[in-house]
Structures are given as structure tokens and as C-alpha cells.
Image (cartoon, rainbow, N blue to C red; front, side, top):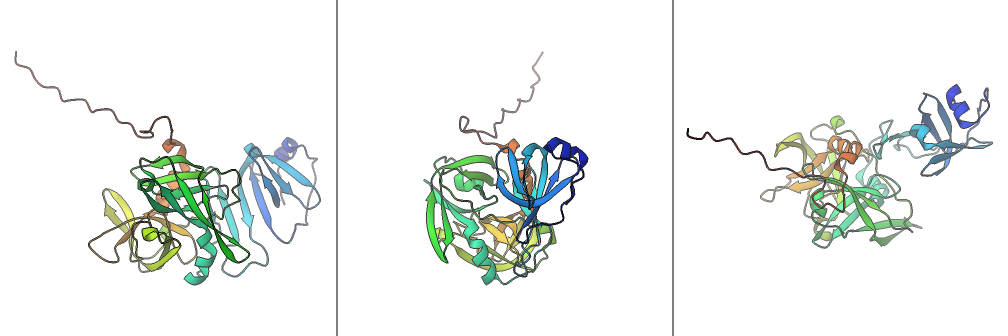
Length: 322
């Protein structure tokens, strides 16, 4: 463990301390603003502070001092699971700091399916997936367009069984009509921690690589479809999309497209109806950009037109006869 002199003073600890013992189960490294770091097991993550177990004492770290948290995997974790998880500060998502190994789809589905949800609105339904444990989730803008009364259907795994639960206190946090992305937040008071997904790098994908989607096509929840990546640069309407042969149907919209490492590389959002195997997904880089700049796309219930409001363009000046 290492910790800088300035951070020690700011946290009210004495200088010259060194700790060599850590619990064998799980460790997180908290990176601080002055370049220092604290390694321990996070007991609680509160609005204003992190509570970290150092092995022999407990330390409270103000949130304002934390740059990011890097979580090390358990020493007895299964092969193929990521060794490190990196929290992107301010980005509201996490990535694997070390690339996970590829695994069979049947294994990944059992692990990831709980994170994929069905998003319901009075006018229809779509899919979505959690990006944080405290209820932030992604879906398509067109799934919730014009709606404010939303609910989310989640299948929790409990004692080896799936338990379906509906959450009805769902807030629209941000949305980008032109990127077809929306960020929602489940705010039910009795909601448990949700299982989030890690975002991957679509740039590391190769054409022909296998991918799979989980969603609710035509309302059929927890449906898994598999295919290959047809192209990474399909231009449609001025934007680039991932094209895949994995079947995408109405109801899949807003769901995740995975690589074989179990990372989200895209958000499924459309298909060509006059052909087969022509599905499309918003690239993960576009999703990260949306999350990193979500304040610019913040939704305001008092202004249904928010965040986009355009003025009429000025009319051209016409020459008048003398």
C-alpha cells in the first residue's frame, strides 16, 4: 500500500505508517487526487465518503479526494474473469483493466443475464442493462421517447432460482435523441444492489468475430441470439454502427451486444426489415461518450423538449426594388 504525505495529513493519519497485510478475499485500490493510493477492502460507498478496511483499522476517505477505484479480483476467482476492474471517475461505468479471457456463450449468459432488463412504457417495451450497482441503466432513446411513466423488469438470481421483480420508480437522467441513447435510474427505496456490466472496447473487435445479444425481442424476455460482427463501420444517417448477423428484433432495442469476453461492445437499436441477419448496434465508444458527458444531455421533467431546443433559422434577406 502506498499513500502520499498530503493525503495522510488531509485524512488525519500519522506519517510513517506502512501496511503489508491485506485480506485474501478482495482488495480495492483507491487512487487519490495527489497521486497517492490506499489499498484495502471497501466496506461502504456513501454519498460523501468511502469506508475502507485496512486490515487492522477502518479509514473514511472523502469522495472529493478520490479519483477512481481499481478493484482487484478475488485470489480464488474462476479462470477467465477479469483480474482488475477500473472505475471510470465521472463516467458512471466500469471497464476491465486487464482483458478477460474468452469464454463460451452458455457460461457468459448465466453470469450476465441478470444485468439485462426489460424496459416498459405505456406505448411499448424494449431492453436495457445496468452500468452501476445502484440502479443506473442504459436503453435506447426511441424506447422511451415521449414517455415519463416507465418501469423495469429484472430477474434476480436467488438460491439458484430466478425471481422476477418489477421496479416502477424509474427516473430519466439523460437522453440523446441523435445518438439514440438514454440513461435511466431505478430509485425504488427497497431496491437491492444490481449486477452491472463492464463496457468493452469495440476497437479491439475484428470483423468475423463472434458476438451475442441478450434482450426481449417481441417481449420474449431473456432471449439470447448469436452471430458474427459483419462490419464495424456501417454508415447510416451520418453515424457509424456495428453491423451483426445476430438476430435483432423489436424489443431488443436498448439491450447489450457482447463480445466473447462478456463485455458490452454495443447497444442494439435497429435492423433492416427487408433482409435477414442485418442487425445494428451503437458502438460502445459512442455509449462511453454519452455517459462521460451526460450532464450535457440531462433531462428536465419541467421541459419536455429538453435537452434539444432549436430556434428557427433566420430567413434569407431579400433584395427590395428601389
